[in-house]
Length: 290
Image: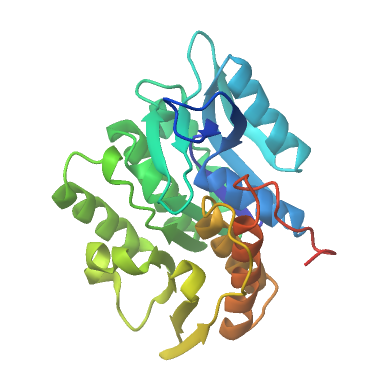
């Protein structure tokens, strides 16, 4: 049985210093769902990924990474004549990274409900979806709703990570409407401190709500109790991927039957590992290393 099923857009990412002056750059692949399933697979959990990539080198690289990490990519479609989306991330010392999105009309952004195998979603232990995929367009949002509906019908756990990216939304109001609705469908909700106002209707005592504050730690409200964890003190190389790594650690511990406090602890460990690497996912630990 699949432990976690997800759907999203695998992306290429070029990381550099200030682009107008930099002569060197680093190429990798990324995506919130990609980071999550790689992290979980390294910890021994069975994960499946649905999505679309172009028939180009970036698409081939994303598939190679996912397959190499043991992720089931049987539901990833290679779209002939389409391109795989890409991010350009400028990383500068002492400043927040600046990310430019190059994903308009990309293969992954054209995800549709027809790409979602409802029977496979229903057979998993957990569905994980993000606000990033929901923001890619009407068809992608319908695909997310299709997956959530299948999970609801089957009675499996739904995890939702808000992952608000302003550049992907027409307006804050539309983001609040969509993200709030999806958050209310979830049993397990992940969000950052500054995303709380986006999903106010979902912040009920019955829902397990995990708030990730990065280097300041995290908290969860579960079973009407609050638990907190401080973040390990590590040299921060790049924050990219740390949120998804945290969610993966938390979900891994939940699948292992651990307590909320232990889930937070594992999430904090994986988040710290992501922060110490230039890659969103390459520095994440195996079960033995954990």
